[in-house]
Length: 225
Ligand code: ADE
Image 1 (cartoon, rainbow, N blue to C red):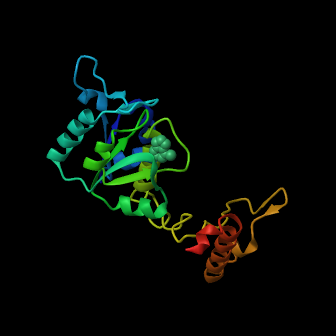
Image 2 (cartoon, rainbow, N blue to C red):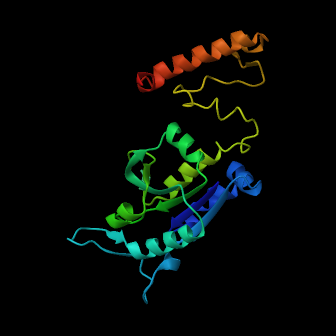
Image 3 (cartoon, rainbow, N blue to C red):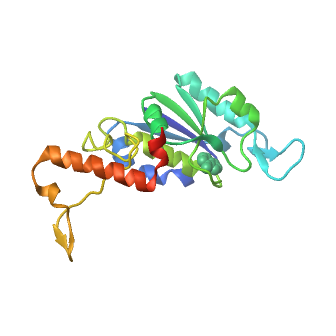
């Protein structure tokens, strides 16, 4: 998979890719991540990438031309499956969306700033709009980092144990069950004995029951659909 991230603040989004699982995935060649500074595509003496709104109103708008130039250049080099725009009015990110996006070959992620991008960017180039939650961030970069983390960990080979992404919370619309490691008894807080019974069907059933119980208590909305 190849991800091209278009941003006015590359320094804001690079660090998650320089540590831990994302770094290892890149080093192993399982994913390529490229950052493009939209300022490099700005024209004119001031290298402006934003301007005031037509019709008036507070806040600057990201101009179409630098974005067009960057996307057009990338598209001349390869085909893209999606051009994703990070925006609070997009579709709310969930595990299903992460699963779908993780299967793509090449994607572009556009990070908005200021008030957002000129509507014509969305009309002309964007194929998917994603929000990471019902709150407004100062830019799309942190949302893009969240999206990238959620999709990259699903790429086969990225996680050590191939089955572990499949047992995450949400993969079956259930939250994950409680997990334990040594010691068996910590200051009187004990690990449920079934987990060291060696009876694997029983352990599996316990985990399913716990996942269901936890979902019912914390996120009953997940059980509705
Ligand atoms: N940009 C600003 N707020 C955002 C959000 N909630 N999700 C994605 N991108 C954003």
